[in-house]
Image (cartoon, rainbow, N blue to C red; front, side, top):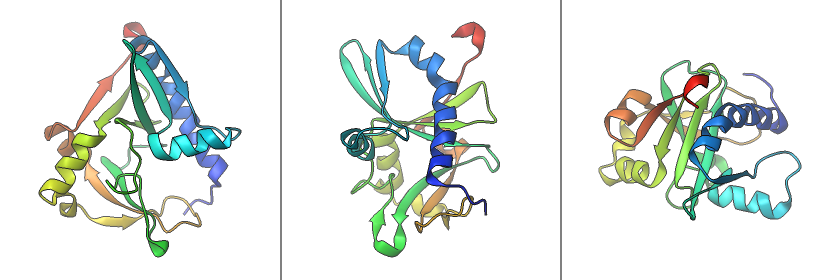
Length: 176
């Protein structure tokens, strides 16, 4: 397990944000990234509830949560079911107590020309309506040494795309 601090993880997420920024500029009229080490307390409360980005297109607000990993090693999305299982704190994917974003942008830093968009309400319906999420193993996060007892389901990316809850967005410098 790597011993990364919370601030190291924020830097990984900042790299993901920088990677998709050209896509955001092309596809939204305005956007605000509310993440970062020096954000105000009210922005931290917003981010916990609605995600890392507020975007606007044609006067409609969209709330986006960013999930960034350094590499796509196993072909899975880690959908967090417990932020701290020992303390009974639900993870960001759970309908009750989870983030209320419209979309997740799932970024792997080793895939510099693509990322995934997950329709979060649709993904939750898919996962919980027929108990599909239980088809995927619940695993403790062991990539980083952290204080929280974090657990999630490792859902195959291909399954998520085939079910219509996720899409891979390919972008190259030429088509931005």
